[in-house]
Length: 93
Image 1 (cartoon, helix red, strand yellow):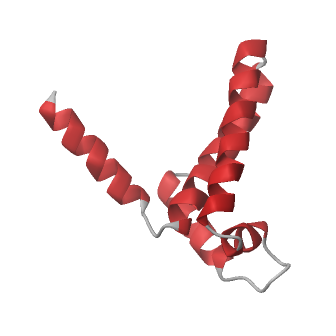
Image 2 (cartoon, rainbow, N blue to C red):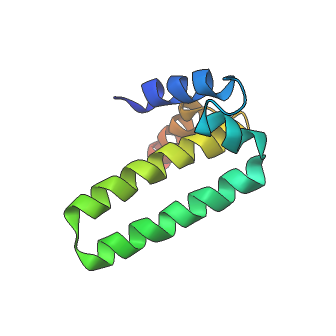
């Protein structure tokens, strides 16, 4: 799965009826809750990194990526916008 495919899946799930989608429920709570959840997942990723648990690290990395994209969606920012910024920065170096 690509980031764009996951972004599209999140967009599709964001409009699901209440109670049918975790993504929709999270987005309904607003950007602040999305940011809080992203932070929680980032901390869990750090913990798994320190523990040297590859399986745990993979699972938490997946959670971080998902919640990062939900966070972007909460502010109507696309992955392509973030990638364009990275490309702009790489052109400077």
